[in-house]
Length: 503
Ligand code: NAD
Image (tube, rainbow, N blue to C red):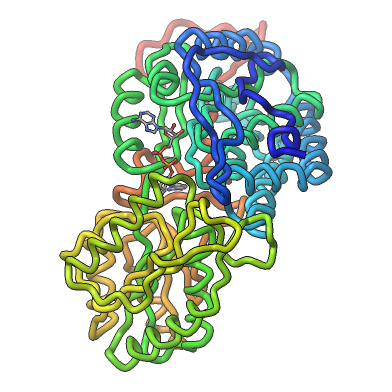
Protein backbone atom coordinates (compact mmCIF):
# COMPACT_ATOMS: atom_id res chain seq x y z
CA UNK A 1 0.00 0.00 0.00
CA UNK A 2 1.42 3.39 -0.90
CA UNK A 3 1.54 6.25 1.54
CA UNK A 4 -1.18 8.09 -0.35
CA UNK A 5 -3.52 5.10 -0.19
CA UNK A 6 -2.75 4.72 3.52
CA UNK A 7 -3.99 8.24 4.20
CA UNK A 8 -6.62 7.96 1.49
CA UNK A 9 -5.58 11.40 0.32
CA UNK A 10 -4.52 12.20 -3.23
CA UNK A 11 -4.78 15.96 -3.17
CA UNK A 12 -4.99 17.43 0.32
CA UNK A 13 -7.86 19.90 0.04
CA UNK A 14 -9.86 22.05 2.46
CA UNK A 15 -12.67 21.30 4.89
CA UNK A 16 -15.52 23.77 4.74
CA UNK A 17 -19.03 23.49 6.15
CA UNK A 18 -18.56 19.82 7.03
CA UNK A 19 -17.22 18.63 3.65
CA UNK A 20 -14.04 18.37 1.66
CA UNK A 21 -13.71 21.32 -0.71
CA UNK A 22 -11.19 21.18 -3.54
CA UNK A 23 -9.64 24.01 -5.41
CA UNK A 24 -7.79 27.19 -4.68
CA UNK A 25 -5.70 27.30 -7.83
CA UNK A 26 -2.15 26.74 -6.63
CA UNK A 27 -0.76 23.68 -4.84
CA UNK A 28 2.57 22.51 -3.48
CA UNK A 29 4.19 19.15 -2.72
CA UNK A 30 4.07 17.48 0.67
CA UNK A 31 7.05 15.25 1.49
CA UNK A 32 7.76 12.23 3.60
CA UNK A 33 10.88 13.67 5.25
CA UNK A 34 12.23 10.20 6.05
CA UNK A 35 12.42 9.23 2.36
CA UNK A 36 12.47 12.60 0.62
CA UNK A 37 9.54 11.43 -1.57
CA UNK A 38 6.63 13.63 -2.56
CA UNK A 39 3.65 11.82 -1.05
CA UNK A 40 0.90 14.28 -1.81
CA UNK A 41 0.06 17.77 -2.94
CA UNK A 42 -1.68 20.35 -0.82
CA UNK A 43 -4.09 22.90 -2.29
CA UNK A 44 -3.23 26.46 -1.39
CA UNK A 45 -6.42 28.37 -0.74
CA UNK A 46 -6.96 31.58 -2.62
CA UNK A 47 -9.02 34.42 -1.27
CA UNK A 48 -12.32 32.99 -2.55
CA UNK A 49 -11.81 29.68 -0.72
CA UNK A 50 -10.91 31.41 2.55
CA UNK A 51 -13.94 33.69 2.21
CA UNK A 52 -16.11 30.62 1.68
CA UNK A 53 -14.80 29.16 4.96
CA UNK A 54 -15.37 32.42 6.83
CA UNK A 55 -18.91 32.62 5.42
CA UNK A 56 -19.62 29.03 6.56
CA UNK A 57 -18.34 29.86 10.06
CA UNK A 58 -20.38 33.05 10.18
CA UNK A 59 -23.54 31.22 9.11
CA UNK A 60 -23.03 28.52 11.75
CA UNK A 61 -22.39 31.00 14.56
CA UNK A 62 -25.90 32.04 15.71
CA UNK A 63 -27.06 28.47 16.36
CA UNK A 64 -23.75 27.42 17.92
CA UNK A 65 -23.64 30.50 20.15
CA UNK A 66 -27.11 29.58 21.43
CA UNK A 67 -26.22 25.91 21.98
CA UNK A 68 -25.94 25.36 25.75
CA UNK A 69 -22.35 24.95 26.97
CA UNK A 70 -23.20 21.50 28.31
CA UNK A 71 -24.20 20.39 24.79
CA UNK A 72 -21.05 21.88 23.32
CA UNK A 73 -19.06 19.99 25.95
CA UNK A 74 -20.80 16.74 25.01
CA UNK A 75 -19.41 17.10 21.47
CA UNK A 76 -15.93 17.42 23.00
CA UNK A 77 -16.46 14.30 25.15
CA UNK A 78 -17.32 12.32 22.00
CA UNK A 79 -14.41 13.94 20.10
CA UNK A 80 -12.03 12.87 22.84
CA UNK A 81 -13.21 9.25 22.60
CA UNK A 82 -12.84 9.34 18.81
CA UNK A 83 -9.31 10.78 19.09
CA UNK A 84 -8.37 7.85 21.30
CA UNK A 85 -10.00 5.34 18.97
CA UNK A 86 -8.26 6.83 15.91
CA UNK A 87 -4.96 7.61 17.60
CA UNK A 88 -2.93 5.20 15.45
CA UNK A 89 -4.14 6.83 12.26
CA UNK A 90 -3.43 10.35 13.52
CA UNK A 91 -0.02 9.40 14.89
CA UNK A 92 0.89 7.72 11.57
CA UNK A 93 -0.12 10.86 9.65
CA UNK A 94 2.01 13.05 11.95
CA UNK A 95 5.03 10.81 11.54
CA UNK A 96 4.58 10.43 7.82
CA UNK A 97 4.47 14.16 7.07
CA UNK A 98 6.44 15.68 9.95
CA UNK A 99 9.01 12.93 10.43
CA UNK A 100 9.03 12.68 14.25
CA UNK A 101 9.23 9.20 15.75
CA UNK A 102 5.90 7.45 16.40
CA UNK A 103 6.32 7.51 20.21
CA UNK A 104 6.90 11.26 20.06
CA UNK A 105 3.90 11.76 17.75
CA UNK A 106 1.79 9.81 20.26
CA UNK A 107 3.03 12.17 22.99
CA UNK A 108 2.02 15.15 20.86
CA UNK A 109 -1.46 13.75 20.36
CA UNK A 110 -1.74 12.99 24.08
CA UNK A 111 -0.96 16.59 24.96
CA UNK A 112 -3.61 17.78 22.50
CA UNK A 113 -6.18 15.39 23.99
CA UNK A 114 -5.50 16.90 27.43
CA UNK A 115 -6.72 20.26 26.09
CA UNK A 116 -9.86 18.58 24.75
CA UNK A 117 -10.31 17.09 28.22
CA UNK A 118 -10.07 20.55 29.78
CA UNK A 119 -12.50 21.95 27.21
CA UNK A 120 -15.06 19.33 28.34
CA UNK A 121 -15.39 21.45 31.50
CA UNK A 122 -17.04 24.26 29.50
CA UNK A 123 -20.11 24.66 31.75
CA UNK A 124 -17.84 25.21 34.74
CA UNK A 125 -15.32 27.35 32.81
CA UNK A 126 -18.02 29.66 31.44
CA UNK A 127 -19.83 30.25 34.72
CA UNK A 128 -20.04 33.96 35.41
CA UNK A 129 -19.94 35.92 38.65
CA UNK A 130 -23.11 37.17 40.31
CA UNK A 131 -23.60 39.91 42.89
CA UNK A 132 -27.00 40.36 44.48
CA UNK A 133 -28.09 43.73 45.80
CA UNK A 134 -25.24 45.85 44.41
CA UNK A 135 -27.75 48.64 45.08
CA UNK A 136 -31.22 48.49 46.62
CA UNK A 137 -33.06 45.89 44.56
CA UNK A 138 -30.32 45.80 41.95
CA UNK A 139 -28.40 42.69 40.91
CA UNK A 140 -25.32 42.52 38.71
CA UNK A 141 -23.60 39.67 36.93
CA UNK A 142 -21.21 39.03 34.10
CA UNK A 143 -21.40 36.71 31.14
CA UNK A 144 -18.62 35.50 28.89
CA UNK A 145 -19.98 35.69 25.39
CA UNK A 146 -18.30 34.21 22.32
CA UNK A 147 -16.59 36.48 19.80
CA UNK A 148 -17.99 34.96 16.59
CA UNK A 149 -15.65 33.76 13.84
CA UNK A 150 -12.10 33.21 15.08
CA UNK A 151 -9.07 31.85 13.20
CA UNK A 152 -5.96 29.84 14.04
CA UNK A 153 -2.70 29.78 12.06
CA UNK A 154 -0.35 27.00 13.09
CA UNK A 155 3.26 25.85 12.55
CA UNK A 156 4.61 22.60 11.12
CA UNK A 157 6.24 21.27 14.25
CA UNK A 158 3.09 20.10 16.08
CA UNK A 159 0.54 19.52 13.31
CA UNK A 160 -2.07 18.05 15.69
CA UNK A 161 -1.25 19.49 19.12
CA UNK A 162 -0.96 23.20 18.31
CA UNK A 163 -4.31 23.29 16.45
CA UNK A 164 -5.72 21.51 19.52
CA UNK A 165 -4.28 24.24 21.76
CA UNK A 166 -6.77 26.50 20.01
CA UNK A 167 -9.96 25.12 18.52
CA UNK A 168 -11.35 22.96 21.38
CA UNK A 169 -11.39 25.96 23.70
CA UNK A 170 -12.61 28.38 21.02
CA UNK A 171 -15.45 26.03 20.08
CA UNK A 172 -16.67 25.21 23.59
CA UNK A 173 -16.74 28.95 24.28
CA UNK A 174 -19.31 29.21 21.45
CA UNK A 175 -17.15 30.46 18.57
CA UNK A 176 -16.83 29.13 15.02
CA UNK A 177 -13.30 28.39 13.87
CA UNK A 178 -11.23 28.61 10.68
CA UNK A 179 -7.90 26.78 10.93
CA UNK A 180 -5.00 27.45 8.57
CA UNK A 181 -2.52 24.63 9.33
CA UNK A 182 1.07 24.47 8.14
CA UNK A 183 1.22 23.66 4.44
CA UNK A 184 4.20 21.39 5.15
CA UNK A 185 2.24 18.74 7.09
CA UNK A 186 -1.45 19.41 6.57
CA UNK A 187 -3.00 15.91 6.82
CA UNK A 188 -3.51 15.58 10.61
CA UNK A 189 -5.75 18.68 10.76
CA UNK A 190 -8.13 17.17 8.22
CA UNK A 191 -8.43 13.98 10.24
CA UNK A 192 -9.35 16.11 13.25
CA UNK A 193 -12.02 17.86 11.16
CA UNK A 194 -13.55 14.53 10.13
CA UNK A 195 -13.63 13.32 13.73
CA UNK A 196 -15.26 16.54 14.95
CA UNK A 197 -18.06 15.97 12.45
CA UNK A 198 -18.41 12.37 13.59
CA UNK A 199 -18.58 13.66 17.18
CA UNK A 200 -21.66 15.67 16.21
CA UNK A 201 -20.21 19.13 15.68
CA UNK A 202 -22.59 21.07 13.41
CA UNK A 203 -21.24 21.85 9.94
CA UNK A 204 -19.48 25.19 9.64
CA UNK A 205 -18.38 25.40 13.29
CA UNK A 206 -14.92 24.07 12.37
CA UNK A 207 -13.31 24.68 8.97
CA UNK A 208 -9.83 24.05 7.62
CA UNK A 209 -8.26 26.06 4.83
CA UNK A 210 -4.88 24.88 3.67
CA UNK A 211 -2.61 27.48 2.22
CA UNK A 212 0.18 29.95 2.63
CA UNK A 213 0.55 33.69 2.94
CA UNK A 214 -2.39 34.45 0.62
CA UNK A 215 -4.77 32.52 2.88
CA UNK A 216 -3.32 34.13 6.01
CA UNK A 217 -3.60 37.63 4.56
CA UNK A 218 -7.26 37.04 3.75
CA UNK A 219 -7.93 36.02 7.36
CA UNK A 220 -6.06 39.05 8.68
CA UNK A 221 -8.00 41.52 6.54
CA UNK A 222 -11.53 40.09 6.67
CA UNK A 223 -13.70 42.12 9.05
CA UNK A 224 -15.78 39.04 9.92
CA UNK A 225 -12.81 37.42 11.70
CA UNK A 226 -12.83 38.66 15.29
CA UNK A 227 -9.67 37.08 16.67
CA UNK A 228 -6.47 35.42 15.50
CA UNK A 229 -4.43 32.82 17.36
CA UNK A 230 -1.02 32.34 15.77
CA UNK A 231 1.89 30.04 16.59
CA UNK A 232 5.06 30.11 14.48
CA UNK A 233 8.30 32.00 14.02
CA UNK A 234 8.85 35.44 15.57
CA UNK A 235 9.09 37.54 12.37
CA UNK A 236 5.76 36.15 11.15
CA UNK A 237 4.20 36.36 14.64
CA UNK A 238 5.16 40.02 14.93
CA UNK A 239 3.89 40.89 11.48
CA UNK A 240 0.60 39.05 12.06
CA UNK A 241 0.18 40.77 15.42
CA UNK A 242 0.70 44.22 13.89
CA UNK A 243 -1.56 43.65 10.89
CA UNK A 244 -4.40 41.94 12.72
CA UNK A 245 -4.46 44.37 15.66
CA UNK A 246 -4.38 47.28 13.19
CA UNK A 247 -7.48 45.69 11.65
CA UNK A 248 -9.19 45.70 15.04
CA UNK A 249 -8.80 42.02 15.87
CA UNK A 250 -7.88 40.41 19.16
CA UNK A 251 -4.54 38.62 18.66
CA UNK A 252 -2.29 36.18 20.46
CA UNK A 253 0.85 35.46 18.43
CA UNK A 254 3.34 32.98 19.87
CA UNK A 255 6.79 33.13 18.32
CA UNK A 256 10.23 31.54 18.35
CA UNK A 257 12.60 30.66 21.13
CA UNK A 258 16.12 30.02 22.31
CA UNK A 259 15.71 28.08 25.52
CA UNK A 260 18.60 27.91 28.00
CA UNK A 261 19.22 25.20 30.59
CA UNK A 262 21.48 26.27 33.47
CA UNK A 263 23.60 23.45 34.89
CA UNK A 264 24.79 24.37 38.38
CA UNK A 265 27.92 22.88 39.98
CA UNK A 266 25.77 20.90 42.46
CA UNK A 267 23.44 19.42 39.80
CA UNK A 268 22.93 15.68 39.43
CA UNK A 269 24.90 15.62 36.18
CA UNK A 270 23.74 12.26 34.88
CA UNK A 271 20.14 13.30 35.34
CA UNK A 272 20.84 16.66 33.68
CA UNK A 273 22.54 14.97 30.72
CA UNK A 274 19.63 12.55 30.12
CA UNK A 275 17.20 15.44 30.36
CA UNK A 276 19.25 17.57 27.96
CA UNK A 277 19.53 14.78 25.40
CA UNK A 278 15.73 14.48 25.15
CA UNK A 279 15.14 18.23 25.31
CA UNK A 280 17.78 19.18 22.72
CA UNK A 281 17.50 16.32 20.23
CA UNK A 282 13.91 15.02 20.70
CA UNK A 283 11.81 15.79 17.62
CA UNK A 284 15.09 16.73 15.92
CA UNK A 285 15.20 19.98 17.94
CA UNK A 286 12.08 21.19 16.13
CA UNK A 287 10.22 22.21 19.29
CA UNK A 288 9.62 25.72 20.51
CA UNK A 289 10.48 24.46 24.01
CA UNK A 290 13.61 22.55 22.89
CA UNK A 291 16.71 23.32 24.90
CA UNK A 292 19.21 24.78 22.45
CA UNK A 293 21.66 26.33 24.92
CA UNK A 294 23.22 24.61 27.94
CA UNK A 295 24.78 27.15 30.30
CA UNK A 296 27.42 25.42 32.40
CA UNK A 297 28.36 27.19 35.62
CA UNK A 298 32.11 26.63 36.04
CA UNK A 299 34.65 24.95 33.75
CA UNK A 300 34.62 21.77 35.80
CA UNK A 301 30.87 21.26 35.18
CA UNK A 302 31.28 22.29 31.54
CA UNK A 303 34.06 19.74 30.90
CA UNK A 304 32.09 16.90 32.47
CA UNK A 305 28.85 17.94 30.79
CA UNK A 306 30.40 18.09 27.33
CA UNK A 307 32.13 14.73 27.78
CA UNK A 308 28.91 13.04 28.92
CA UNK A 309 26.82 14.62 26.13
CA UNK A 310 29.41 13.56 23.57
CA UNK A 311 29.19 9.99 24.82
CA UNK A 312 25.38 10.00 24.69
CA UNK A 313 25.39 11.45 21.18
CA UNK A 314 27.50 8.49 20.13
CA UNK A 315 24.54 6.19 20.84
CA UNK A 316 21.71 8.48 19.67
CA UNK A 317 19.59 6.46 17.24
CA UNK A 318 18.63 8.52 14.22
CA UNK A 319 16.34 7.09 11.53
CA UNK A 320 12.82 7.02 10.12
CA UNK A 321 10.12 8.00 12.56
CA UNK A 322 8.12 4.92 11.58
CA UNK A 323 10.67 2.79 13.51
CA UNK A 324 9.77 3.28 17.15
CA UNK A 325 13.22 2.21 18.31
CA UNK A 326 14.70 5.45 16.93
CA UNK A 327 15.29 8.46 19.18
CA UNK A 328 15.21 11.09 16.48
CA UNK A 329 13.81 11.37 12.95
CA UNK A 330 14.58 13.70 10.03
CA UNK A 331 14.11 17.45 9.67
CA UNK A 332 10.94 18.67 7.96
CA UNK A 333 12.21 19.63 4.48
CA UNK A 334 15.37 19.68 2.38
CA UNK A 335 15.43 23.50 2.67
CA UNK A 336 15.28 23.36 6.45
CA UNK A 337 18.02 20.71 6.50
CA UNK A 338 20.22 23.00 4.37
CA UNK A 339 19.47 25.91 6.71
CA UNK A 340 20.38 23.97 9.86
CA UNK A 341 23.56 22.63 8.23
CA UNK A 342 24.51 26.17 7.29
CA UNK A 343 24.27 27.14 10.97
CA UNK A 344 26.71 24.35 11.81
CA UNK A 345 29.11 25.70 9.16
CA UNK A 346 28.61 29.19 10.58
CA UNK A 347 29.39 28.07 14.14
CA UNK A 348 32.76 26.79 12.96
CA UNK A 349 33.47 30.07 11.16
CA UNK A 350 32.49 31.97 14.29
CA UNK A 351 35.06 30.04 16.32
CA UNK A 352 32.86 27.69 18.38
CA UNK A 353 34.24 24.20 19.05
CA UNK A 354 32.25 21.53 17.19
CA UNK A 355 32.56 18.57 19.56
CA UNK A 356 30.08 16.36 17.70
CA UNK A 357 29.44 16.89 14.01
CA UNK A 358 26.21 15.35 12.71
CA UNK A 359 26.67 16.52 9.14
CA UNK A 360 28.21 13.29 7.91
CA UNK A 361 25.31 11.06 8.96
CA UNK A 362 23.75 8.70 6.46
CA UNK A 363 20.81 6.51 7.33
CA UNK A 364 21.04 3.20 5.45
CA UNK A 365 17.93 2.66 3.34
CA UNK A 366 16.88 6.32 3.77
CA UNK A 367 19.68 8.05 1.90
CA UNK A 368 17.35 10.68 0.45
CA UNK A 369 15.70 11.53 3.77
CA UNK A 370 16.29 14.92 5.39
CA UNK A 371 18.50 13.58 8.16
CA UNK A 372 21.12 15.35 10.23
CA UNK A 373 22.91 13.77 13.17
CA UNK A 374 22.95 15.47 16.58
CA UNK A 375 25.50 18.31 16.75
CA UNK A 376 27.20 19.70 19.86
CA UNK A 377 29.08 22.98 20.09
CA UNK A 378 31.23 23.96 23.07
CA UNK A 379 32.68 27.39 23.94
CA UNK A 380 29.83 29.26 22.25
CA UNK A 381 29.76 32.96 23.12
CA UNK A 382 26.85 35.43 23.21
CA UNK A 383 28.01 37.44 20.15
CA UNK A 384 27.82 34.40 17.86
CA UNK A 385 24.81 34.08 15.57
CA UNK A 386 24.51 30.39 16.47
CA UNK A 387 23.81 31.62 20.02
CA UNK A 388 21.54 34.53 19.15
CA UNK A 389 19.35 32.97 16.47
CA UNK A 390 16.83 30.14 16.63
CA UNK A 391 18.29 27.22 14.63
CA UNK A 392 15.33 24.82 15.12
CA UNK A 393 17.39 21.69 14.58
CA UNK A 394 19.44 19.12 16.52
CA UNK A 395 22.18 21.53 17.54
CA UNK A 396 23.03 22.14 21.19
CA UNK A 397 25.33 25.03 22.15
CA UNK A 398 27.27 24.98 25.42
CA UNK A 399 28.07 28.39 26.90
CA UNK A 400 30.50 28.55 29.84
CA UNK A 401 29.89 31.04 32.66
CA UNK A 402 31.34 31.47 36.15
CA UNK A 403 28.25 32.07 38.31
CA UNK A 404 24.48 31.66 38.51
CA UNK A 405 24.16 35.44 38.30
CA UNK A 406 26.10 35.49 35.02
CA UNK A 407 23.92 32.66 33.65
CA UNK A 408 20.76 34.57 34.53
CA UNK A 409 22.02 37.84 33.02
CA UNK A 410 22.76 35.95 29.81
CA UNK A 411 19.23 34.52 29.66
CA UNK A 412 17.62 37.85 30.48
CA UNK A 413 19.57 39.63 27.75
CA UNK A 414 18.36 37.21 25.06
CA UNK A 415 15.55 38.51 22.85
CA UNK A 416 13.47 35.35 23.38
CA UNK A 417 11.91 34.29 26.67
CA UNK A 418 9.86 31.17 25.98
CA UNK A 419 11.20 28.47 28.32
CA UNK A 420 14.20 27.85 30.55
CA UNK A 421 15.27 25.52 33.33
CA UNK A 422 17.84 25.07 36.05
CA UNK A 423 19.47 21.85 37.17
CA UNK A 424 20.48 22.07 40.82
CA UNK A 425 20.12 20.42 44.23
CA UNK A 426 19.98 23.81 45.94
CA UNK A 427 16.42 24.96 46.74
CA UNK A 428 17.51 28.53 47.43
CA UNK A 429 19.25 28.83 44.06
CA UNK A 430 16.20 27.35 42.32
CA UNK A 431 13.82 29.73 44.09
CA UNK A 432 15.99 32.73 43.22
CA UNK A 433 15.99 31.54 39.60
CA UNK A 434 12.21 31.05 39.32
CA UNK A 435 11.59 34.40 41.08
CA UNK A 436 13.80 36.59 38.93
CA UNK A 437 14.31 35.07 35.51
CA UNK A 438 12.65 36.97 32.63
CA UNK A 439 11.12 33.94 30.92
CA UNK A 440 7.51 32.75 30.71
CA UNK A 441 7.86 29.03 31.46
CA UNK A 442 10.47 27.86 33.96
CA UNK A 443 11.56 24.38 35.01
CA UNK A 444 13.49 23.22 38.06
CA UNK A 445 15.16 19.94 37.12
CA UNK A 446 12.44 19.75 34.43
CA UNK A 447 13.89 20.46 30.99
CA UNK A 448 10.67 21.06 29.05
CA UNK A 449 8.35 22.93 31.42
CA UNK A 450 5.35 22.85 29.10
CA UNK A 451 2.33 23.80 31.23
CA UNK A 452 -0.42 21.18 31.53
CA UNK A 453 -3.83 21.89 29.97
CA UNK A 454 -5.29 23.43 33.13
CA UNK A 455 -2.61 26.14 33.09
CA UNK A 456 -1.78 28.30 30.07
CA UNK A 457 1.19 28.31 27.66
CA UNK A 458 3.14 31.41 26.73
CA UNK A 459 6.56 32.99 26.66
CA UNK A 460 7.86 36.47 27.45
CA UNK A 461 9.72 39.06 25.41
CA UNK A 462 9.76 38.35 21.66
CA UNK A 463 8.36 34.84 22.14
CA UNK A 464 4.80 36.16 22.44
CA UNK A 465 2.94 39.15 21.07
CA UNK A 466 -0.31 39.80 22.90
CA UNK A 467 -1.46 39.50 26.48
CA UNK A 468 -3.19 36.17 26.79
CA UNK A 469 -1.54 32.76 26.59
CA UNK A 470 -2.65 29.64 24.74
CA UNK A 471 -5.13 27.10 26.22
CA UNK A 472 -6.07 26.79 29.92
CA UNK A 473 -7.84 29.63 31.75
CA UNK A 474 -6.36 32.29 29.43
CA UNK A 475 -8.11 30.66 26.46
CA UNK A 476 -11.52 31.30 28.04
CA UNK A 477 -10.58 34.97 28.37
CA UNK A 478 -9.17 35.11 24.84
CA UNK A 479 -12.14 33.48 23.13
CA UNK A 480 -14.87 35.35 25.03
CA UNK A 481 -15.94 38.89 25.59
CA UNK A 482 -17.14 39.94 28.99
CA UNK A 483 -20.55 41.51 29.35
CA UNK A 484 -21.72 42.86 32.70
CA UNK A 485 -25.42 43.23 33.29
CA UNK A 486 -26.95 45.41 36.00
CA UNK A 487 -30.63 44.67 36.53
CA UNK A 488 -33.43 46.18 38.47
CA UNK A 489 -37.09 45.30 38.40
CA UNK A 490 -38.86 48.30 39.93
CA UNK A 491 -41.67 47.46 42.24
CA UNK A 492 -44.95 48.67 40.85
CA UNK A 493 -45.77 50.16 44.27
CA UNK A 494 -42.63 52.33 44.47
CA UNK A 495 -41.97 54.90 41.80
CA UNK A 496 -38.86 57.07 42.03
CA UNK A 497 -38.39 60.43 40.43
CA UNK A 498 -35.47 61.35 38.15
CA UNK A 499 -32.02 61.51 39.79
CA UNK A 500 -29.27 63.68 38.38
CA UNK A 501 -26.32 62.75 40.58
CA UNK A 502 -24.14 59.65 40.16
CA UNK A 503 -25.46 57.04 42.63
P1 NAD B 1 6.36 29.81 10.29
O1 NAD B 1 6.33 31.13 10.99
O2 NAD B 1 7.15 29.68 9.06
O3 NAD B 1 4.86 29.39 9.87
C1 NAD B 1 3.80 29.38 10.79
C2 NAD B 1 2.49 29.58 10.04
O4 NAD B 1 2.50 30.87 9.42
C3 NAD B 1 2.24 28.59 8.92
O5 NAD B 1 0.88 28.24 8.92
C4 NAD B 1 2.64 29.33 7.66
O6 NAD B 1 1.89 28.93 6.54
C5 NAD B 1 2.32 30.77 8.01
N1 NAD B 1 3.25 31.73 7.39
C6 NAD B 1 4.56 31.54 7.13
N2 NAD B 1 5.08 32.65 6.59
C7 NAD B 1 4.09 33.56 6.52
C8 NAD B 1 4.02 34.91 6.07
N3 NAD B 1 5.07 35.54 5.58
N4 NAD B 1 2.83 35.55 6.16
C9 NAD B 1 1.75 34.92 6.67
N5 NAD B 1 1.76 33.65 7.10
C10 NAD B 1 2.92 32.97 7.04
O7 NAD B 1 6.75 28.72 11.40
P2 NAD B 1 7.10 27.19 11.17
O8 NAD B 1 8.40 27.06 10.47
O9 NAD B 1 5.92 26.46 10.63
O10 NAD B 1 7.25 26.70 12.69
C11 NAD B 1 8.43 26.81 13.42
C12 NAD B 1 8.45 28.06 14.25
O11 NAD B 1 7.32 28.08 15.14
C13 NAD B 1 9.65 28.14 15.17
O12 NAD B 1 10.12 29.48 15.18
C14 NAD B 1 9.10 27.76 16.54
O13 NAD B 1 9.82 28.27 17.64
C15 NAD B 1 7.74 28.35 16.47
N6 NAD B 1 6.83 27.73 17.42
C16 NAD B 1 6.50 28.45 18.53
C17 NAD B 1 5.68 27.88 19.47
C18 NAD B 1 5.30 28.65 20.70
O14 NAD B 1 4.44 28.19 21.41
N7 NAD B 1 5.89 29.79 20.99
C19 NAD B 1 5.18 26.58 19.30
C20 NAD B 1 5.54 25.89 18.15
C21 NAD B 1 6.36 26.47 17.20
